[in-house]
Length: 634
Image (cartoon, rainbow, N blue to C red; front, top):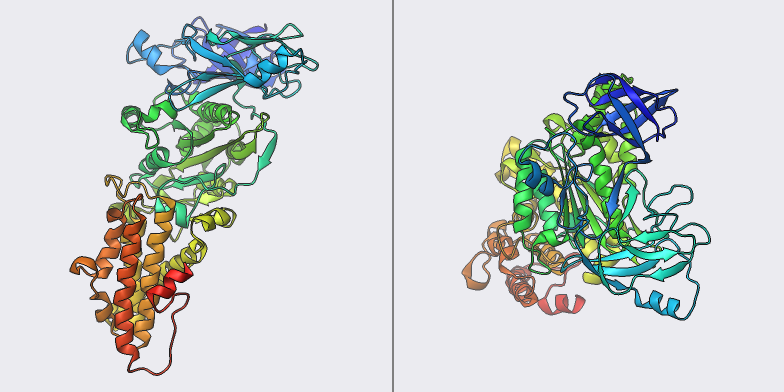
């Protein structure tokens, strides 16, 4: 393999001569401690290398050796529940060996080579081989399965190696043209390095396989993002939905709740696997993640959430180059489980710190800076990351997806800065956090005026199967909140008492939507997660209250009468509407039905009392004037 000598050192960027025969993005070992680096530029006989470890003590003239392969991660059973750094070093193992401070050049096997797993060969493949059929080692061919955790079964497959890349092989060609499976490992214990199958060209496909982090794993077919990723958070699922295989950004200033929102989505979303990337975050925030995630209970199984989670910790005091590559490591691990047919959600916290790493490395390479010092290729790198999301049909015929949710930390909460603006070009779901909502303890602090989702139209058929009124109720509620925002400007000038009752009703119902629907208590056992059917029904009841109250006001009823209507137990209906989110359990649809009858009964009585003295019949828009008609319509 090519080797050379260091000529110049500029922090994590070094120049070395004698590496003209090495390949771009090849991994190198630098100095006596064999620090891991990557060639990022070749200039004749010289190579520019970024080093992923602490380079303190590195000297000019030290030897640099190329490994001849790109930066890759080892994919196989044992990834779930592990905590890695940005270049897939197992931090728990290194902590046991070196203590709290990791020494330069520390190594650790990404997957324990001694750990055994029970391998079950694929029955269909075993049957075909037993009958003498020649089975080609095609990309994605299922060889067998390993029970990785109680929640996740790891599928051992032939790697989806594109021609000429050499990616994903275990040992030898493995999936070359014309290669056939000649031997399949029988049921029994295997390790990461065991050959799951041998091929006719002399190669073998091991249980664990290497894959370059900068190379997206291909799929057989890309599918439409028409299925929502259910998070259990009402403001997300109903107002700004994210589809499986979609991309979303959570921008917000310091203290607005980016990390907490990602924690809630990670715990409650219906993804099968969670990959959490702590990219350049403060050490104390990453410590909270590392201590809280193992204690969180998976709502589906009741076991630890870590049984379907992979954590990548790259704090702000770790080498800046490793921060730059950590998001590629995370998305490669996610694609591995996607290819098994799992739905994977990536939480990247935060892409702003990743962009700052790009800026620092670009400055040390003396590149021409663009706006605010970021490199000119920042949009390209952001696009490369977010475009690896998607819902696909895998080579084995399964359906899997990778959904990416990236936090953005604009300085001072300025959404016009480059990272936020470029991110908006490549994502289709924007959950803008509002500092005023965060200061008012409104959780999640997602602004309903600045946020948007382009997936709403695509997931509408799915939601209509849950409740046909999802789209119109969502639209009416968002319109009402926009009207309320305009009226608030008038209220600041002249006060609410100067408004007519129909406009004061808008303010009243908007407050109910904020408190009774958009705000969610993560410490409440009932309200922490809201099932899809309950989400729509809650908003439907609030909008029914608004529409029916409008009719009563047109008939002459004062707003004071409407706000004073009482429901079951004698409490005001408007207060009960706000509390319904935490009183009606997801598994008790009758509670919402009973409250709906009480709501319609009270409004029917008020409407009848004023209709007797009013000519005509101003029927409400979209709502029946009696409980029976409303039930029949639903």
